[in-house]
Length: 326
Image (cartoon, rainbow, N blue to C red; front, side, top):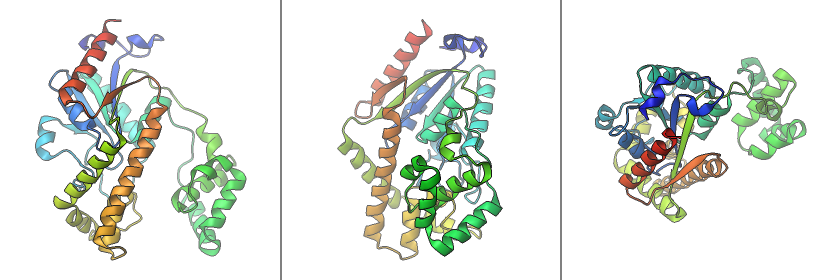
């Protein structure tokens, strides 16, 4: 595997490009344990591909590796922002590309591990030329929504971009606002613009996806983990975040699965039992979306969550060894 690190990227034959390893999968599938195990066998560095793990103070509800685990297996792109700050797909792509160059420069192989599939997609395909946020347009749209309702705004979106309207739920004001904002700024729909891609990923990517073959097993893992998070102090973690001066329920960080449900419980919008049920259900929906992404993902080697970690590790090492000999 280490022979790759002597090859410069950019050649037309991608088999000679520098290697990057992706370890993808739904929540609670065992991605992190597998990535950490690779450290014992290859000269790799881990890059987190998770839109929630970038935030400091969000440890329990994100299943962030513990301090002891991070001593053994440091991760890039963990704890880089406060929860009040925003972090876009473009921010991630820029950070990840910079880190990949730095890791290769140290003679190591980057391993990108996580479940934020949009981040992986942005790395592989480049970014669409979408405009940045415009506060004036957003304020204008929010005023219209306050007068007419988000259902009417969704109907507006359906007229200009039926594809986006079919994908975006009528009760999702953030995405409705963004889609309408893009149209008003550019005169093009967000669907048109996202069809235009940027620079491709100039590396030889080895992609692995880990998931249970039995959906019931995944659901049980999700339920068990959510309850364990609560036993470990998840409620207090959200309360601490809630008490921060600039914190509010509509922050992107607080829309993460689990955090919103606990926040609603702390606001007495639901009972404890309802919070647990809704938190587990929301996590299952996240896992379903992640699996939907992965089912159509090209050139991926599938691993099974049900088997022992050592077996999946050997499958990854064997696959990489076969590729390196081609």
